[in-house]
Length: 479
Ligand SMILES: Cc1cc2nc3c(=O)[nH]c(=O)nc-3n(C[C@H](O)[C@H](O)[C@H](O)COP(=O)(O)O)c2cc1C
Image 1: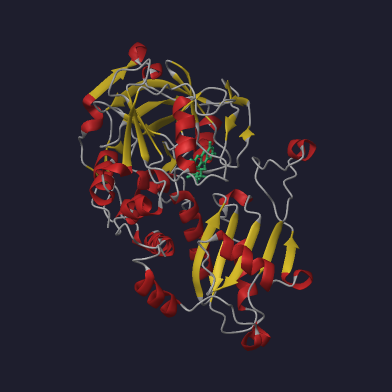
Image 2: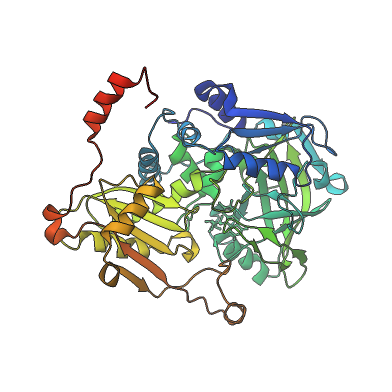
């Protein structure tokens, strides 16, 4: 289990487990595009976590962290696993721990470093923080990328935590882009009563908590408790004076205020370079009227700038938890002999490995995965099933299986399905009409079960012979 309670502990753990090079300190990069571009270039090389300080326009010590889970070993450390844990085992751990049965409720510890600096009323000033402008065509500076947006259901008291992009719109204004999710549904309840919705936005917390916030927990489940399950220890919170919204006691920055209905007041939000690899959405959206800002000494903004999916993202946990959700769904649906699930292009393509023991098994795995209602808002386009001799964490292997084990007229199928509003392939007129039909491709790239024993044998050396040759020759030839 992960024995750290906040972002700083996590950074210390990364350095201790993976060496000092796992976190690169960088001084003097500019908030306007330079931090964003450095993050992208470094992620492209699967580089270290980047901790930016001395950012022009902000006090020294006000920092930005990016690419904090940019490698598979860093994801392992975040979950408290050994750094050499294989990717599939990380996905399996994620799946096992996120089962709702193991939720660990958050605890109120009453005090914590988040209250080290508090400003209220006229004194609040979001522009003090070194919020990057991440991409060239972004419509503003987005402080909320890996943020937590906390709201409370006025009827049940359920505390919901979600991640919605947040743009600094002035000293005391933070716009939020809330799509059709639990957070929006709760805010709408306040708006229907003619009230503004109280909200707390956390910018900077440990990466597992940030990842849990973006997971689609069932209605009534608090993502803090899901994070507790993933980390193996409860999230420690406090209630700021006069607030019913618990915030992590060890958070870096907390922004509190109220969001009025967009019919009452709204600001222009977007566009923003999104995880699909394209800029999305610009239009009037609701915003937080900020009433109080709390931050730790020398606060760290946790930055998760979306990157084009052709680049290994600075946050590899997103595809991993996407894979774990697909795998959990297969388990729950009784699909047997799944040996692993992996995701590519963030989560746009899902690959399942099965050990075939019966006819129709592979097909069932495919159809079940494609029908999962929790699949990334519906934008997942390609579902692939392969045999368990394929290394699904290696795209070349997956492509080889697709190219040699499919019979396209029979084993590749297209089904109808709905996509999400941010899908770049939605035609403007269909988007305007709310027509989200798109479709999915189901690729069965397994050996045909009915003549599996006669399927040609692959011409790669056996692992034991490869190991033997490596041992004998590696002093003379790097192997
Ligand atoms: C980095 C990141 C950014 C996200 N940005 C947004 C966003 O701007 N708006 C949105 O509605 N969902 C966004 N999401 C997805 C939501 O966080 C996700 O659907 C979550 O489950 C919503 O939680 P809720 O249903 O509890 O409100 C983002 C997810 C991630 C990982």
